[in-house]
Length: 234
Length: 234
DNA sequence: CGCGACATTGAGTTTATTCAAATACGGTGG
DNA sequence: CCACCGTATTTGAATAAACTCAATGTCGCG
Image 1 (tube, each protein chain N blue to C red):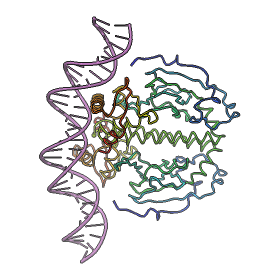
Image 2: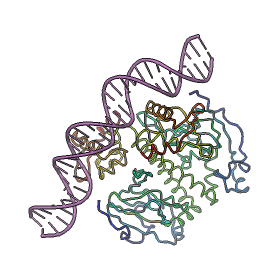
Image 3: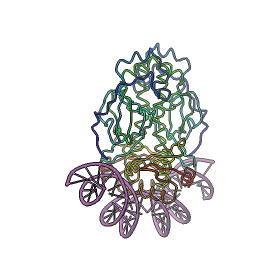
Image 4: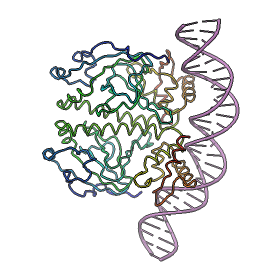
């Protein structure tokens, strides 16, 4: 995977008032006078595949919302082994830990080309205190982070490797686009499911041979959801 | 494990102002006038081992802080297999999901005798909006829930069964009490670590034979942390 | 004392890992 | 445009780990 300098991704200052994603975004219910209270700009960035957005231990005093793309959150064990603890998609928020002034707890790395907005954490926090709508949205994001994490555990770290791969394929496939599913390297696949790269590869190859998935383009699969579900049900 | 009716555990109304745990608790920095704004009482409960505090799908419009004891949060897969996604100890908060008016997402069941406070969620939420200190504490709790969940994944669902058991023993052992560690049934052990009851039992027995842990009382072990750490490091 | 629940142990099987080799792929430079 | 290189994927064979199913042992309680 090629590496790109993380700093050259800036693409401009966001116009939150007119953001196309506002309904789904954190600022859904903010009013014009609320935006006026945000004095720092909301910067937009566009990261190519493979770029780190932030690293564990850093603190940018910023939180991020994903506009498009796919981001992995990677956590490292003391012994160096890594595990992907979550994937972030459009509408997800990350970096909330710096609300408490803490360091980021994960590496956040773009798995696909990814566009994000960078929000000044302190100001958003202050704004949230006087603004019930934003407060609610924030609570929802926290909640989502926790329930995502819980699903990650029960869904991706439980059962046979075959079941885990099937669950991931189903979760990643877009029902509004004919159950298409865009994936990524086998190593990342393994780091999500807690299995080795080889096992991940073997199972993907097997699913392809069985016709459960058809590779339309590089790492883009058409999934037979019903058949995959049967594998999960055992 | 014996079952107890969940309703007969009420032990009185809490006096938060004079709570011995207040420094570590959610209400650490609240002032007298803030407490006056809480119109519903904060009830205290005392649950024997094995008692459910709440069930997935219910909504008591209440959140809970654990005063003492140990609680498991259990999540169920559609196929019925269960997984323990977190353990709660003194100072932890749970049931925050009903802030958004949602149902509880897990079963919460006491693993040891457990004392809790039941807080009216809506009122706490309203109070938090006008109160930066409480707002901060809430954020910290969310944050802790997420990072606990992340550790659960990397620590307890990664590596060999032997490493997982060692990590759990270390995490559960109390360094201020001579590295003592109070555990629970082997089935719960397995449901935490994503291994079978038999494997959990085998490894615990092996650790006992090797002297890495010494059972002083029923499920209460003296742990040789250094030796366990060596197992983790491989 | 005996029952029931839980823990431990055993044997055989399945599953996933490890280590190694072979193959496909994308991008670069001639 | 093509040959080449490094990286990622796929496959193979042997090994190790964990699971299943079944039996036995242990403890507390009625």
